[in-house]
Length: 423
Figure 1 (cartoon, rainbow, N blue to C red):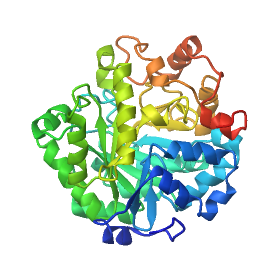
Figure 2: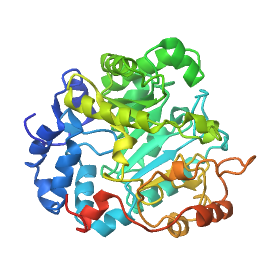
Figure 3: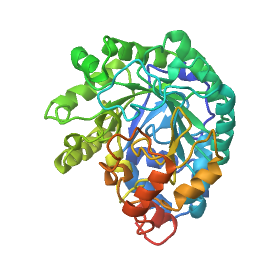
Figure 4: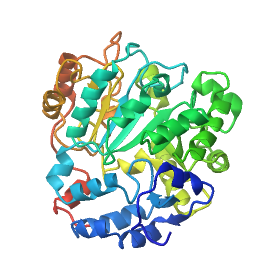
């Protein structure tokens, strides 16, 4: 696998090489990317930014594709080509959706300690209504689609939902692992799902079971990882950080455990005081822990023996892509409520009642462009006591009018795209 200019594989070919995946550091991968014809369509000004960004990343070979991390489409792929084409049109990139997290159900058998989706409606939308919503999301330009919940595997029609999107959309599924049997994993791969993110917070069985609120959660996650890989799905774990996990020696042990378990990536999230943690300001990690996360990202990027470490601390920093909540990113919950992000429990409309363009017009009056700071953190603690999430549109608009300043300086990536800043 000397270059990235190869045909896009199916799940069968990915499964055939699942035990022998090549890994390269970010700088080496950038050199390989330079040979990809798609890269020649990029504005020259973006190349130094990408080279600098990839310096703290690495890539893993998966079949005849490469994966930088679960935030970006595999390379090469139709989704990657769409991403590159959009980079050539700065206004279009800024104004169109790139990623959507879509909870196809709010139901879940687990009781995770951090759940951002807690207390939302338990009534699922019909498959017909979801098909219409999928059409609207496609029209809005989505490239990265994350099907989640709740527990999405509770829906027997999950494969049909994934199938509503064409090859130009990279589809992933976020799951606790409960129900991800070998048969279900193969079925998801056959439906066009590229990757599966499995909840795993600890390398200790008792701690994982306690944090995820389900007996046997640890065993379920490990079996799901094995089943996903065997089916040819790119497999990563979704981990919610804590001070204990980031303690000296502990996090390195966890990364090595994930590698041994067979996952390619740790997608590390910081806890946010929303959902089940509503009002819990004590869970917010202090700045020294954020620095430690960034240090670990750089260390993991240089060590090809460790899994990929992807963090929003880096992806959404002001010097990178910033916070795209409500602009390049969107969250749709299991009842059709549209929120800027899964960590921002404010609805700007319901897709069962209004069209997506109408909802986005309302939202963009308050969040017209990507931000330098995390919108979820900026709005923490503002949901009125007793208000079930998400807050309805009239309350969302009032709070955003009072607390969110539209406009201002954009993250560096967008300034570079618009040639207002040179790396």
